[in-house]
Amino acid sequence: MHTPHTTCPSCHEEVFLDELVGGRCPLCGYSLDEDDGTCSEYEETLERSDLGWMIFQYFVFKQFCSEGAAPLQVMQVLSRYEDLAQCNTADAEKMQFTLEVSMSRWERLLPKRCAKCGRIFFQGGKAVISGDLSSPEHKRTYICPSC
Image 1 (cartoon, one colour):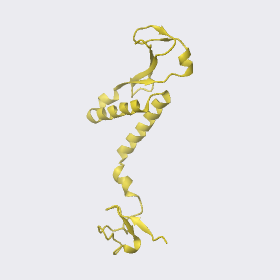
Image 2: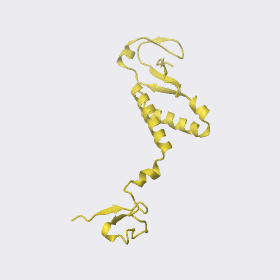
Image 3: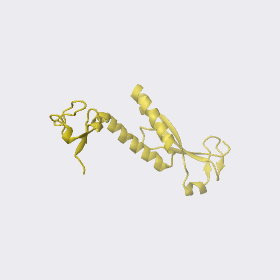
């Protein structure tokens, strides 16, 4: 037999409805009758600014991961951006990043020019995207195995 119960938003303890004292939690005295049924935990932890930041992180993360960047590197770029945005938003908008990405099969077959030494190579090496977060386009360069 299941007795109806709820969780008190104030003390976060499980309270059975037949234990309520005058519509209040017997442990902390919080009035459960005034609760409109919405989950206040999310209201406490997520503010509107946090939600916007989470959406921004999601789309940046999705964009870079679809390019082939490692998720850890993307999160490091995002945390660096967040640190800069808290100190100076003008610097954060111009923040430069460089991420190593995986090459597609077609890219592996084509000849590539090394961005550091200028040598042309066919096998090995790595692809790198770089730019700033304010621009939608990112520069893709290649680095040979010897560099």
